Image (cartoon, rainbow, N blue to C red):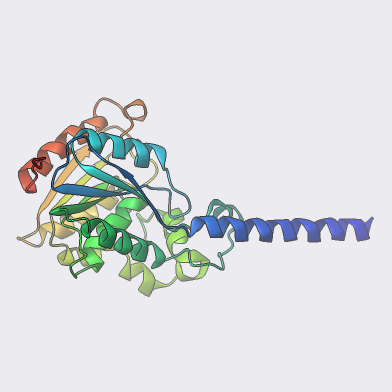
Length: 277
């Protein structure tokens, strides 16, 4: 019996390793999905879905967002960026493939290059939850011609430090070992680098968010207010929770108003215009 039991354990371990390899291969994929509007404008948005840097919500924070943007004459690109994979989450095993920081930022930078080469006057990044962290980080870290022209962060992960850190996102971004290093936590806690954000930023969250502590957004907002030249608009709803994206069926009547507010903000802060055919 001991021999068979040992064999079963070895087979199970082998299957888990194989699943990890396959999962990480899918997790590190970078793909852009485009939805074009009926009437083109001078503006495009790259969408970064959330998922704790382990997986991606490609529906509520991806496809539905893109469809809503296209209905408002904005070219939308859903970015499937590298993630650590759900198996890494469950088994606490670091993927042997390129699926952790800075792979996500490099993926977004490549997407910015592709979309900017299409000739849009304004190219922004919109991110949700962990994708919001990635979106804001692009404004912090990318300073050449590929820098985003504006950023939108919806209920974003901001800090990598206690007490308000979303630990799952930190582990997904940095892995088991690096997530414990203070230097890595500091370098990716965006509130500590807010002075580097020069583009307009639209920030939204809900005070009853039980997934990402609402004070993540407050940390970023308060840090940006220290710079008199910062261009930030912050809307905090009392209710709405987390993870609703642009999906009306997942958001309450209060939180879903972010979409209407964002369209008004875009027209007031970005040189948005419909292109003549």
